[in-house]
Image (cartoon, rainbow, N blue to C red):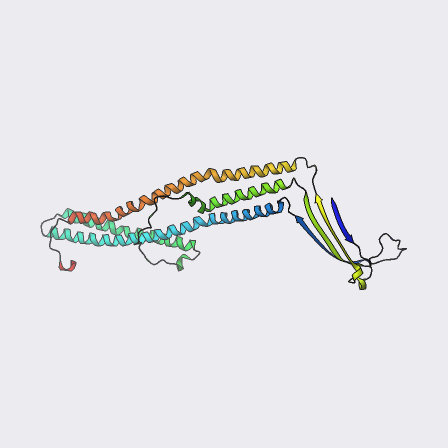
Length: 320
């Protein structure tokens, strides 16, 4: 259905007139405008679906970037932990050297046995042998950091900096809103919103398409009178297009949109519980691992302190 108001150019050649073999010119300078009335929200929902899909794509990109950043942080703190381990090894080696000298003094004084001296020497050399392995692991972590930040391993180095500050305290409870910070959850939620908007687009197809059109310009049989007032023409009209029979196409499109929405809801809701369990397990491990590692790191020093705390032997002056 179409309704229009229009005015024709007075300088245009007569339409349908007999030219008697003559050639006539018809110069036109048209301007046309068209506007679709979004009465049923089809355009609005279509824009909304594409906007949500773009946000879902951005979340997918963040999902790819997040493991890379996590690996970078992991390798960095592993390097710092190895720096602390190397420092601990150096301190332990110094204590084992003192213990070896102590056993030698006790053996020379007739208090200890040669077996104790050899045991102390073996323990010292075993601890010294661990230093190259720590250095190799530290170099591997340094090269991994260089690769992740896009720099050649030969031109990148991390200065030794042992971790001295304890990790920040972990709160006793973690809010469920923590899941919203995961990019994969955000991507699933944005995909669900885009699918919901596409349902609106499918529903709007049941209603007529309304549009306004406007045309104007100039028309004349001679180019010298093309831009004169009588040569002007214009028309304004409205249009409504309604599909009467489509063989069930619109109903199928609507059912497809609803099914796609249900699929995105399932993708969002079902894995959320497993992801929450994963966060809870890692949260629990973060609370227990620091204490266990602290006890292991203090074990060698406590061992030698308890072993020789009751021994009273005169130490050389160079030890003091």
